[in-house]
Amino acid sequence: MKKIISAIMAILFLVNIAGCSKGSSTSQKSDKKVVLKMWAHQNEPWNNAYKDIIANFEKENPNIRVELETFPYNDFESKVQTSLINKEGGADIYELWGGWALDFAPTGALKEIPKEFAEKVKKECYPATYGALVHKNKLYAVPIEFNIENGGMVVNLHLLKEAGLKVPKTWEELKQTAIKGTRKDGNKFKVKGFDFVNWDSVSYYFLSFILQQKGAYINEDGTAFNFETAEAKKSFAELAKLVKEDKVTNLEGLTGGGNLEGYQQLYAKRAMMVPRGPWIVSEGIQSFNLKLGKDFDYVGVPWYTNQHRFAAETGWSLAINAKSKEAAAAQKFIEYVYQPKVMEKLNIRCTQIPAQKEISQSASYQKEMPYTKVLLDILDNSQFIGRFNTDRLKEVVNDTFVKYCSNEYKTIEEALKELNKKANAFLKKK
Image 1 (spheres, rainbow, N blue to C red):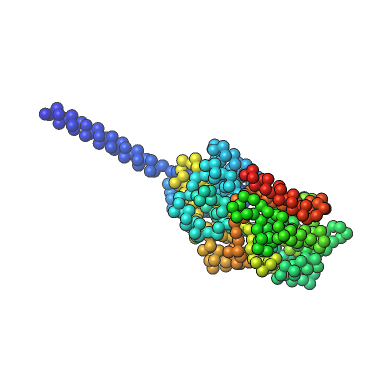
Image 2 (cartoon, rainbow, N blue to C red; image 1 turned 180 degrees about the vertical axis):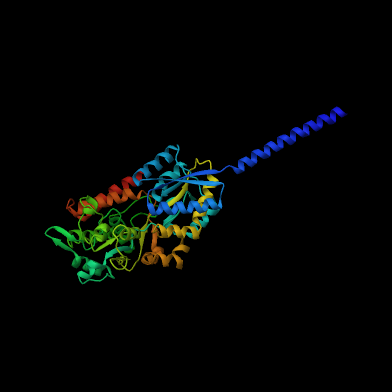
């Protein structure tokens, strides 16, 4: 009996030891710090904002450390593609451009955002901000901004005053102001009246003008472009006339040859009005030492018709690598960033238009970003541009525009037929 009791005691002792060992292991595991790697493109204000957010997140979550790695933009896109497409290496969290998500989500490279949080995002954000992040009704990233290149422009207040002109309120006024404000020395521009010829603006305003005439540039199921409509012809002709007949700008913004982008030329007093997103404002202040409201201003671009509509593509977002071993911690970080109090600071520091409706309408955001009001007032007029590679569309639209303005097509119908053919060709290949 004694032997039996001794044996039982021995077993209990061993079980207890084993239990203690298991408990120690659990404790060690829970004390282990989770390390997340985050990749983003190099942009000083953005990177500094991320660093502060990470520091605050780590204070609230001492068992998680986020290591931010940044790359030059041109290298960043290729690195993200290589890691996600090949499913090798890379990061846990990516700062991801919306158009890239179209390629990555169908391959299983991105982790699905939990359904409950995904529904919250869809309810609280503008549709254009997450349109490209959805695949088969599942969300694969969380938007951090509303990417908008429609509706706003910088104006050089000194050039306007010197020409005795005012900020235009209507589209017709804009054209007349541009014509009167343009100054040339022979064939060389001294001041471009309205320099809309850049990678984004020709395409965005072309699509917007079509929509403003109650037309459509793509069918309802997104499987075919149609740029041979009466609305498309009128829109293309309106923009081309500004170059070919009114001569308020040239094709330099698409063909090269200039040492500065259009908005930079405005800051250098070589352009009077340039339509671009609000992200250019900080460069005017920080790089050109100009004062907003005194040297230049950010104002609304007058609408082409009384139908105020435009297309917008999905901008920057945060996504999780499907291969991440720390996906739960990564999701926790993204949900932390998404909080309105955190996201609002990020949007302000990065001069971003908010993806979240609540932030765009908040008094505190509008107080810090007063010049964005011309855009905040039109966000509800937007529609998601569509599920296609927007860079490819811009490429074929811009190429056609340059060739038409250079008289390489005999008629506008010929130009739009070629545009339609090229655009639908890449749409079928996606």
